[in-house]
Amino acid sequence: MNPRLTAIAGPLKGTSYPLAVEETTIGRDSANQLCIGDSSVSRRHCVVKREADQFRIKDLESLNGTFINDVPVKERELADGDRVRIGHHLFLFLTGETEAPVVSSQVLLEESNLLTGATVQVRIKDALYLMARDLSALMKISMRINSIRGLEQLERELLELILEVVPAEQGAILLVDGGEEFSSVFGWDREAGAARPVRVSRTISQKVMRERLAILSNDVQASEAFDVTESLIASQSSSVMCVPLVLLEKVLGVIYFCTSSVTSRFDEDHLKLLTAIANIAAVALENARHVEWLEDENRRLQADIELDHNMIGESRKMQSVYQFISKVAPTDATVLINGESGTGKEMVARAIHLNSRRAEKAFVAINCAALTETLLESEMFGHEKGAFTGALALKKGKLEVADAGTIFLDEVGEMAPSLQSKLLRVLQEREFERVGGTRTIKVDMRLIAATNRDLEEAIRQGAFRQDLYYRLNVVSIKMPPLRERPEDIPLLASYFAAKFSRKCKPHAMGISTAARSLLMHYDWPGNVRELENAIERAVVLGSSDVILPEDLPEAVLETEAPENVGVTKYHEAITEAKKQLILKAVEQAKGNYTEAAKLLGVHPNYLHRLISNMNLRSALKK
Figure 1: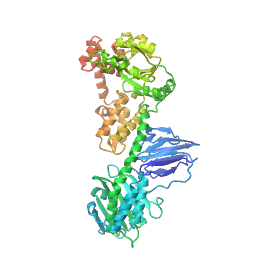
Figure 2 (figure 1 turned 180 degrees about the vertical axis):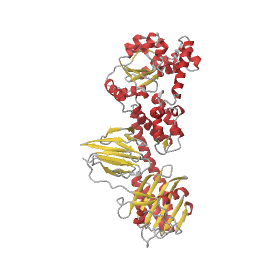
Figure 3 (figure 1 turned 45 degrees about the horizontal axis):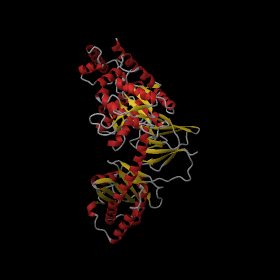
Figure 4 (figure 1 turned 90 degrees about the vertical axis):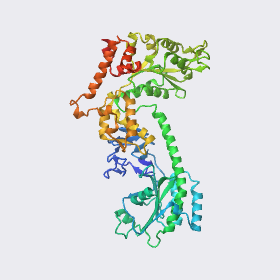
């Protein structure tokens, strides 16, 4: 057994780290067994614990979270092949033996100032006039690199080709992704290849990118103006060359070369040649990087197909939900899912479908509260041509489309009584007729329904058929509201932050400790959907690398931290005022919810949701 973490994306790509000890701590602090010097990684980010041949990873309340297969986790057992994301770094957890270790490229970025009077700076447009031998080298490089698809292979080939025409000892290609921080680095040594670290001046690299200048600096060690780090002194570099990679006015990164030879220093012709090579290489590098991005995006989307239909949460209540899904999915039993709005009822329905024998067939969802009675009937059962004004062609209903698959009726408690009787027949006989039709259509489908209403109370009020309720309530589950599983809030928040960051930020955003505390102590009346909206808002409006309290909605900011509980009850007072307004409106409307909604200026369906979310059913009975 050879347990290890192998970096497959990020600055450490290609590097393997053995997990031979009982505990391997990972973080930015040098005291960790695996030290990752990157600001996206917390000082003590996570720990991998080994017990015999089993490995568990535990997040240590890191800023950006620890992700296993793109899902944020607090603690999880690792399986061979799991993808572990720590900050901007993606690793594979592997346990199998390998034939030979893969030597990865190492580039050390140093905070050193190497610019002196012995420095030549060349604009890209000035590197046009080259000697014949240089043109021959350019042609050779162009022909070789245009046939290479993989980014790392291209970078290696490019550096080796440049070393054939430039008297350098080491070279590196550093790529950025929207800012000045390098997202990809690859170094090569003339004698040792990738086995020897390449030291690069961050100062020169960032100056080249900002000013789009090609820079040549000689007499590095001799100048008193140098603020050179010990490691750079140890490398004995006496000559450095750095040129920008620019494509369509966009800076992709830099190409960097250095040598310690005092007899074979770089000259201005070398700088012009390297600048010309960079102009050609920029296109190939961007194409290779785009191909890798497309491949990664494809893998991520494949993973998201599963994630969109599964829940995130490790609380005891969510474990019960997972157990329920595993038990009912293999059957064809009708399922009724109860719960407040935004708790993930449709996600449970999709998870049941995906784990059933009908997974390869259609999953069709209908929101019964979103359509009028006439439209809902046509949507469910379909209609014949000419069945009503505007029915210009035959239309299959959702029940027919769901044949051999699963149909999900959301907000089934809002269905009109006339449609309830027709749905009852479908459940009993598995047949129906289209609107305006006489031909009976047989269907083989599984039905899953969901509601945020108390259907037993609706039966007592005459708003819901009792026989239909019994048909729907074969097996049922109540989804826990988010306030009853607060331990899942950090995981959900981290997942949403990563999800929305991919769309509008160069890197995934973390969540500050203060913001996380506010999220944990807000009661989330809108549940997971409200949390998702709050995090999306914070990512879009946030101006830093982490979500701060001021990025959160006002309702969340009004939440009292634990130490301030009892000092003020402002948020509770607002909630109580809403309850009293609803109770008074229903009383004035003599129990008529439609009239009460008019008095409040809201839609009747929204009033029903407020009554359910605020647990006012019992108060309204009195």
